Image 1 (tube, rainbow, N blue to C red):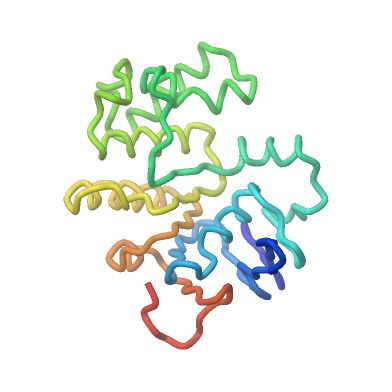
Image 2: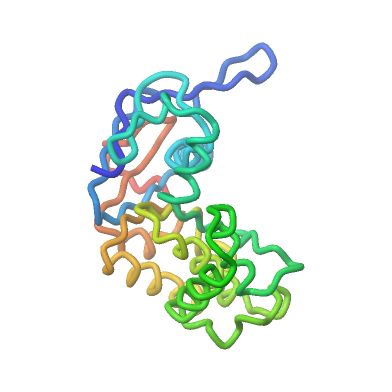
Length: 227
């Protein structure tokens, strides 16, 4: 099992008030699965994604990633896990405007102490994989929205992570471009990658093997759409 959450809760303080973003959540995701996380605003989707990506820690409960109990790791170990085992794709792309597309894709490898020559080789392979090799020397401002998201996916895949996390990956795209990105994510999953995505898009969610719906920080078993 790649992802194993057991009895996870996450609370925050807002002034004198305690807000429970996740409440006693248990979820397992096997290797090679594609899972869509849906739910209304405030249901806990973003909090869950942050926990899965080791960007945050549960207030209580256990999270194991590839069998590793995340709560036992220090900040350096968490950084290594994020860099080597997890790929992130964001709605807003988060490409660095001053760098070329290839340099953006290389960035996670350079943080992992890969040589510049090897990082460039692997970045170009990743760009070819998403159909963007011809844009390697362009800047992000020269890309369309779909191209920018494909570049972001290449950057997420360049470290060959075990787990790909995508937060509203088609949210900033028109329907045609969104379909292209959805098809790319589907092909990434078919290659054996474990994919977990947060989305409000029912059509995109249906392309995943499983849909998990959240409501009020819990998994919603009522059967309603809630997306």
